[in-house]
Image (cartoon, rainbow, N blue to C red; front, side):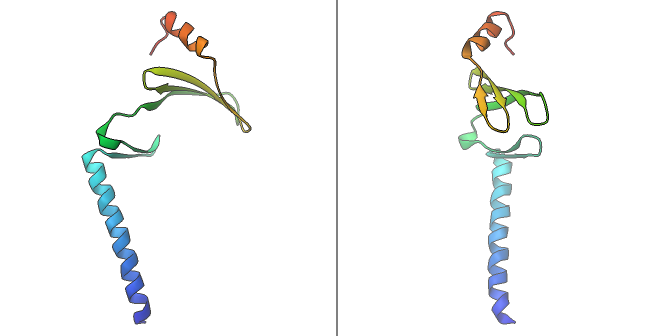
Length: 101
């Protein structure tokens, strides 16, 4: 019986330390646990550099993603077998037409 007590206490100690460190990181704003966009880690409190602006579902396994990366925008198409970035000229044309968000 005593053979199980020490490993059990060690497991609870490790889980407790993990929970305490997550709590401290969340309170300081260094980590965000969001159910919508998933977990994100901010090193040094810097704002996120990669943000999903919009997603358009084209079919059950195909979608277009508009992603803000730093100061630029990327249009990414996804399918079960590939992931492609649209031509940068399209995004420059969109900005020239006043479509910048």
